[in-house]
Amino acid sequence: MPNKSVHTFDVSNVSKIFGQGKNQTVAVDDVTLYVADEEIISIVGGSGCGKSVLAKMMLGLYPQTSGEFLYRGAPITDQRKHWSEVQSVFQDPFSCFNQFFTIRSQLKDAFGILPERLSRGEVEDRVDEALLAVNVTPKDIEGKYPFELSGGQMQRMLLARIFALKPRVLIADEPTSMVDACVRANILDYLMKLKEELKMTIVFITHDIGLAYYVSNRIFIMHEGKMVEMGEPDQIIQDPQSPHTVQLLDDIPDINRQWIKR
Image (cartoon, rainbow, N blue to C red; front, side, top):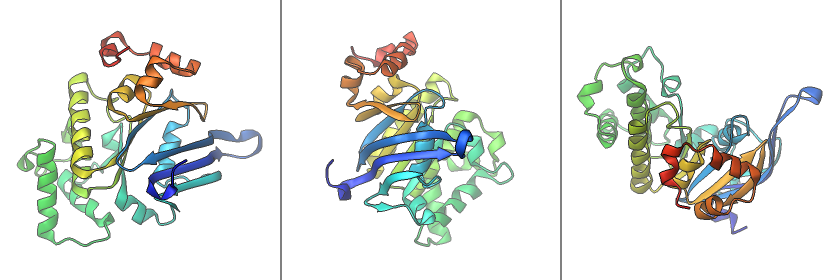
């Protein structure tokens, strides 16, 4: 493995176990991988394979049960500092916003996670710039609450928060699974724009190997907590080595097979 100091994440023989004795569940089982700076990787697998648990470990929400989990060469010990650099986008944007506060107020409150203190004017300007970056005119959401927007619009609000905070790393857990094909394409475009403008590292968590092929530098296949295959997209798609990878390929709807260049 290359020098750990150059990596965003270094994960060595990591396991995450919930419960004890007969009731224990091994969610992540002896996983080893690294994520390089400014790389886009996808962790792909079916429901319950452990990919979302691994994502939450990257966010510092779960400590590992065993193994070594490093962010930029050090363990995750200061969660607040970690979140100033590592942010997330989830599949249900409504769960990420409080329904009783306006969207703009919540976008402004998000700056509280940053170590530097911005003036009120700087915060207002950053919020406006972030909204414009996702093609939303600031006045269009003025005084609006989350329940007044559609799912696609709320996904844009999540992305606007990322543009505003400018993190080094984005964990995107099924960010397009609840929207239609048109909105999905727009969200992917915004994520690629984020990657280029902010020089971010992005980790996609998805069940869709077609999506992973489309966006990733490398793909990791998970099944029952284990990493069963990893490699560059063309290698994974054209010469799959694991039966679980083959199953994921078989599950791609015909309408999405245009992404796969066999």
